[in-house]
Amino acid sequence: MTGNFDGRYRVAFNHRQQWQSFINPYQTTSIGLDARDFLNLKNFGLGLNLFYDQVGTTNFKTLQFNIPVSYRIGITKDSVHSITLGAQAGLESQSLDGSQSTFGSQYNGNRYDGDLAGENVSGSSARNAVFAAGAVYNLDISRNLRFKAGVGIYNLNQPDIAFTNGATGTVERRFNYQAGATVYLSPVWFITPGIIHSNQGEFRETVFGTELNYEFDAAPYRYRALFLGAWNRNKDAAIADIGFYYNSWRVGFSYDVNYSQLETASANRGGWEVSVIYILRELLPKRSNYKYCPNFL
Image (cartoon, rainbow, N blue to C red; front, side):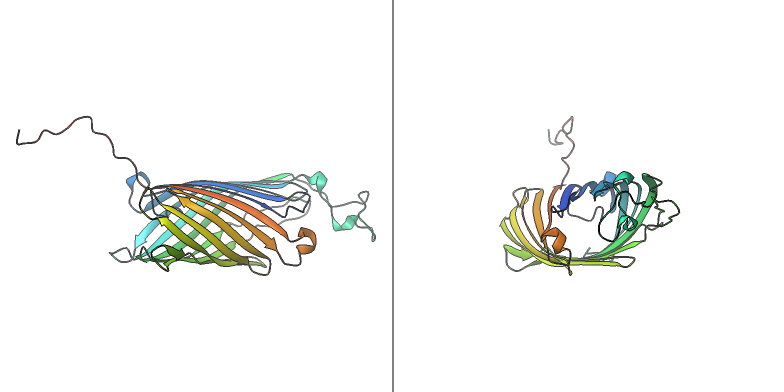
């Protein structure tokens, strides 16, 4: 959620490549920038993010640019309970190379035959506005115990998409439900369990697991920690991740091993992913061009 973090500004980079055994592995990259208390407007968050995805032999590409906003509402005066509401507006461009498409009608009963007629790909690109909204509940009992749970709805306007003659279709709404926590087991060990469930039309996906973290130094501006995690994408893949915190940086690397029926094609090779996050926690104070003279002089 935009602005829902400890700090003032956050920059995030994420890149993933999936199913390396395929001819054209899936590639996804995202870059985001968001601010908490933007322009010193208390509880107001603003961000920018860019998403790029390329999949399959047709080089089906998705490029999305979004502007998310959020507002944090304190439920109690001590800030233990709060809700962050968010909305997002963006532009999406999708394209593919129709000359590389293959269709079931080109199967002659024994093998693929490129001389047989396929479907007529009438367009190579589509552009749409996209909208999303969501909310997160935050429970901050102390530094040693925090919990959050949220819901997000994407493709609110269900944009149209069609690349073949006579075909019409819309992108269905996607619902994300998530929950996570930070729980200290000792002064230096803590866990960060989490779960996220997504559904879009007939498709369902659930990822759950936890990370075990060890703090070498918890002091501000000298923070050092390592983490190791184990996750599972339900009925599809087992995921392991490792990384570290260094001052305001968080760097992580993960790899998943596919165990579903897709393993025949994937050879159990899933995807690797790298993420880098930098959080600027405090802005430097403005330097005064003059000094006050003590009144006792």
